[in-house]
Length: 109
Image 1 (cartoon, rainbow, N blue to C red):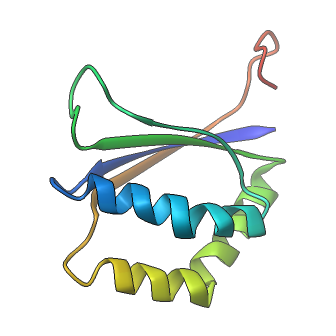
Image 2: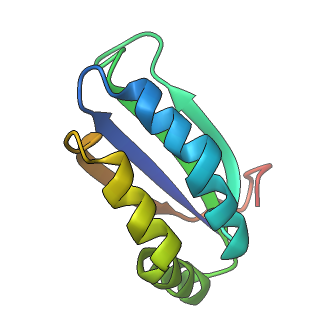
């Protein structure tokens, strides 16, 4: 298993819109492409407390990761939803991601 840690710097005032898009559009598409969601978090204490969304996805391996994201990005439903939800401008300023591999002693493998 590998994990992808994604951090979104959200446009100020757009967190509710982004959370709504994840809850109603993105999560069903993640499921469609076998992208296992471990969790979502908003930063409560620290930098960017009102503008940061972090989430963790699990994949079987790098091949699964690449195939799943390629299919997700190409999905016509996602493309239409992204356009529709960003009519008033983008919801996210910056996206960063890291691919994480568990250590031998990690409880989460």
